[in-house]
Length: 600
Image 1 (cartoon, rainbow, N blue to C red):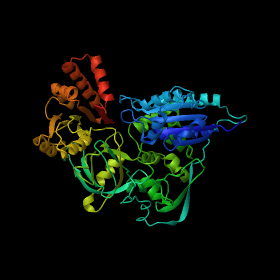
Image 2 (tube, helix red, strand yellow; image 1 turned 90 degrees about the vertical axis):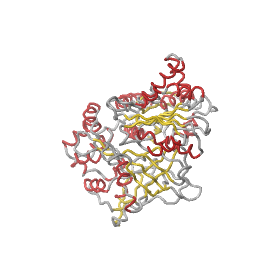
Image 3 (cartoon, rainbow, N blue to C red; image 1 turned 30 degrees about the vertical axis):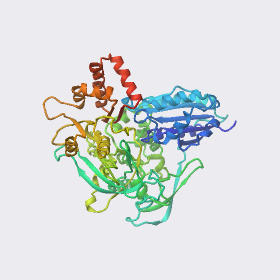
């Protein structure tokens, strides 16, 4: 029989889709497929016509947008001049990962599945729609879908006579080998490998593979000391970077693990952090991670690449069980990676947000037996974090500011849970010496009109106000009025961000400000109440003056309640029925006169 080839293509923003793609790739190898796995934008899409079997794993981001590493593919596959039968020789399946709290749930996967069929490709299964909001996470949909996938794939592409599916008890080879060198660096040198540049050559733009190392100019508390949350206004100097941005854009920041966590991890795995190694791929299909230097130190690998503080996924436990020489630990790990053990895994890991490092600590006999070659198979890389830019390049040249809530909360575990990036950034003290952070800018999902005469209505409670500060500063630099901001927080005296700045703009008639301080009176007042209270004004701005309406902030309940308040204004002020109000909102969204950017 001829070679059995399968291609796994993924579009991933946070790493979940890439992790699932890795899982599918391992399962394919157990079924004796020659398996290649690439991000959609790194794959040469013109070769798709020659692929016999492709599995697409796609996340949906923002308001139905494709992830950054599939945007070019997305533009190509929807070109109108592509022949309708161009993919007629390709069998395919699409697995989507999304969040049902967003209006365009799994939009990318649904649209891609339909488009591939239009181009003549043969779907072997209905599209899978994994949901982050499900109590058991996307696995509740993904796991049974994958079982169906392999049943169908083996029916269409049967094993050669004499071959059998490789059992889960048999460990697959590692993707890489770590060839350790004899020399050991001094601790002060071992985390300096591949330091991003402080000045970018002319013509180059900072990116994930080539970030700009920006000095922190200030790291300011903007909440009162007795407030429940620590929020910072952090300012970066981007002089000489070539970074350009507009209101609505985001800055990507590459965080790193703390020295304490790095040392703890190395102790558990009996690794010398100052030892150097060269990373080598085991096969020609696997690329060496471009953001790891060659040679590299263990300290650099753990500090800047391995996400030892993430909550591990099911595939982590599956692979970890293969290394265990302790019967009791091995049985528990196998249970966590089985379909029957998912509720127990959720209770142990997901609900309390237990980290990879804590899991390794809980399974000490297994951890000290992990072959070092498998580290990059076992632990995902640290993903960059996106922050809305809270300043304007017109108002503050060579500066980027972000408004950042330091993530810290309690679960049933003894130690507080802390966000990796926000905790790291909050710990940096520029007053104690120069501190630099790897960053780059990218386009955000929000777009603001260039015409200064068009009014903007911006609803930004809490740190959701960040992109609107950028837009207001930009318009203020051009003396553009017509800025209407609805801001909400708990207390006027504790977390009213940028109060003095807003007051100054109100006095200059640049800004009209509406506030909702939810805890300053017995009855809680939120931004949606202020929206409803100003119905006539908002109807006039949107229907007669063709204004734009924006929402930014936490995705929990605020966006839906603000949208409901807006639709009620369409009914009360515009004389619409509920159905007509819904249709009108859809039209505003299609014309980009209604935009929303929310996060979980």
